Image (cartoon, rainbow, N blue to C red; front, side):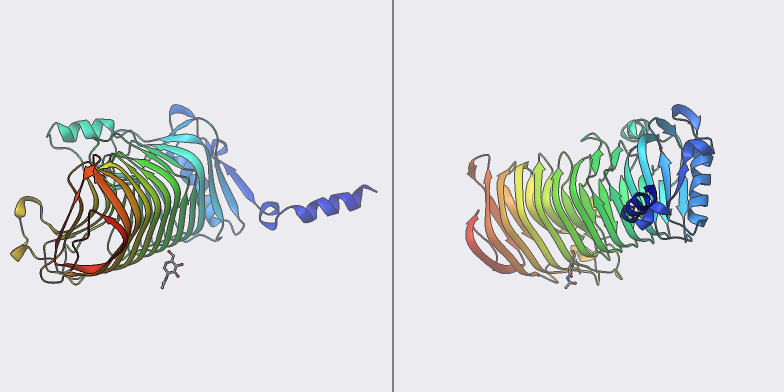
Amino acid sequence: MERPIVLILLMFVPQSWASQTWYNVVDFGAKGDGKTDSTSAVSKAWRQACASTKPSTIYIPHGRFFLRNLHFSGPCNNRAITVAMAGILVAPPDFSAATWLLFEGVDGVSIRGGTLDAQGGSLWACKKSGRNCPRGATTLGITKSKNIEISGLTSINSQMFHIVINGCQNVKLQGAKVTAPGNSPNTDGIHVQLSKGVTILNSVISTGDDCVSIGPGTANLWIQNIHCGPGHGISIGSLGKGLEEAGVQNVTVRSVKFDNTQNGVRIKTWGRPSKGFVRNVFFGHVIMNNVQNPIIIDQNYCPNNQNCPGQVSGVKISDVTYQDIGGTSATEVAVKFDCSKASPCRKIQLKNVRLSYKYQRARALCSNAAGTAAGRIEPSSCLY
Ligand SMILES: *[C@@H]1O[C@H](CO)[C@@H](O)[C@H](O)[C@H]1NC(C)=O
């Protein structure tokens, strides 16, 4: 009599579970005591999971696991590796690698839960003191990989960028919590470049630099339901530093709240010759709270006025829509389109944009910016 019941139950167990192999890092010698170096234990677990032909889960239980920089490299023998984290990974304050935790050349990896604490504080202090300091490391890098899912990850106090997605296809990042102090240098939240089909959802990002920064060669990027602040806002760029540069296209940013950030939605290019471009961008359903530059295109970026012959950007910006954007600017100029003389911005569209300057009238400034406006627009449009 029991047999049929067991069989019926088995029918409901997903195939991927039934054949799942578990690798608990503790079984490989990791210790969640905050002191023991668990790098080689986690590395061994990764190598076995990657070598397995079955779906695999690497499990990091509760505790603080001290981990030096680690390279999770592929290709692997299966396309379903989950790194399930209940615990906290802690970086040594003194390592020097470009990236602390780097996934490279993998296909079909999910990272679930967990906290990454890169302990950037001492490096920021060094940088602020003006001493000669290491550059610092990205906390989590995903490079030359595809079909990646990251959910419920917390990243705190990165030395440099928190999460970098580089040269990837089909990456979904959701429910991330990224935190560093507003005055910590170069602690960008999420940086995307040379990647196609990246989605960033339902995340809270407070840092000392860009909330999300979008580099050359980004296409089909979707960003939705994000809270930014403090920090420098969502930025396409800096672009156009080099002459030969891949463009940015099809970017959607919607349902974002910016609190006390330096910028809201920004496009920024160097005042240098370039074949780069930005096209087909949608910024919509955005709330600005006390943002210094809520809407800005700056095509004259040239720190220290060095190496920008003629100060003219070659990057062509077109088809950028700003729709249903409201709130307050911390400065009088709430909308600024400072476009290139050589390649003016084209097809900028404003639809229902209402921004005030501390409850007074704000201003809009345009140079070399063409487009249209519809609905209520405050400050009134300066596009030609
Ligand atoms: C634009 O990107 C979205 C994902 O963000 C994608 O669904 C859509 O197909 C892309 N559109 C084009 C024309 O490639």
